[in-house]
Length: 124
Image (tube, rainbow, N blue to C red; front, top):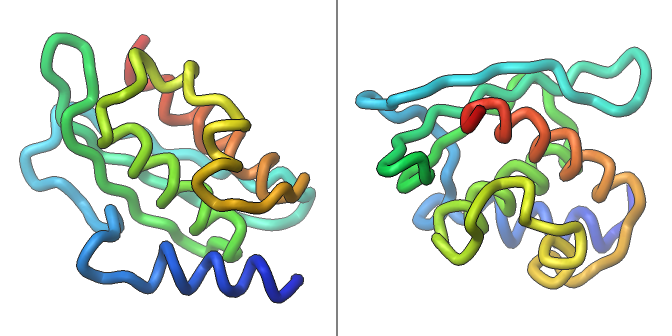
């Protein structure tokens, strides 16, 4: 794992004041899945969300057995969703994700895409 990924992890995932890590007690929906794009690994993500007019208005996640790539991906995805600037989860592009994390990394992008696909299941 490169130094840039470690620094991004510290910036987004260790900021306890702004993290979306945790669980919503009054969630409208919950979705969980094993998402690691690397065979044999186990990133297990659980999203809890609150919706209004079929839009996510609050989101939290729990990351079990996750590598730093998945932690970064679900945290940044949660922040982008919570910002309200996207009409739906699938409209959050890899470019938008890369703009936030300020690095282009294929493994990080693979984790983001898997997390986005799982979260989109709550809006079907």
